[in-house]
Image 1 (cartoon, protein in one colour):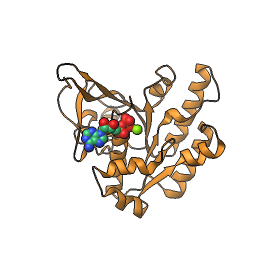
Image 2: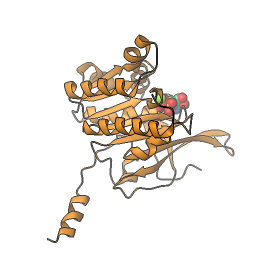
Image 3: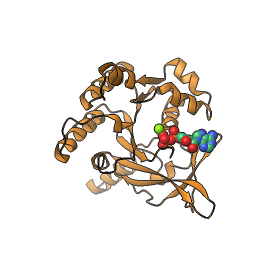
Image 4: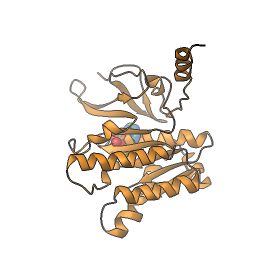
Length: 244
Ligand SMILES: Nc1ncnc2c1ncn2[C@@H]1O[C@H](COP(=O)(O)OP(=O)(O)O)[C@@H](O)[C@H]1O
Ligand SMILES: [Mg+2]
């Protein structure tokens, strides 16, 4: 086989893992490339934490060990929210396959100030190495404080953090609130993929509607449009149609 042919074969056979969100994987050639860092971004209430929890549960169901790292809220609250859709979450929490890590308590409250990139990284490294996790969620990334103020310094801090997390070989979701648009644009460049959740008013129906969009997904022929996303009794699902 020619060198080009071999390269094409390798690219096509790259392993993909499911996000556990019904209807989503087909937007990204069947799933995520493992071991990379992804970003999920959107306004409050758009479904970020639920998406991230479904991604972790998918791993736990496959017998993987996974971790949800909360930087602000008690992570048990997110697990309780998720239990409404899938009560089996407690089976994985109790068996230690889904680790709920309360970083907010460890790093924020004890030090009396927001966590730093270095502090979070060293905790994650320990967690990844001692617990051998394959999937990780950090929620929300926006709680971590930059040391530097200028954009170049921020970019350097975030990029070194992301690279260090990627070196752990754990498929990771950074959850990001879309509240300060200018403050967190760097993470879009640095992550392997960016998924954006939309939550807006459908004026005709006088109701809010949810949609999902893949802004970026390296090495992937992905859809770029907005797809309707909704909560069902089993959690979030993506439909093969536009939101309006
Ligand atoms: N059973 C449900 N049916 C419909 N919507 C729900 C249900 N459970 C939660 N929600 C919606 O999900 C929102 C929270 O989703 P979440 O994933 O925590 O969002 P985010 O992390 O983006 O703030 C709630 O504010 C509510 O609007
Ligand atoms: Mg959330």
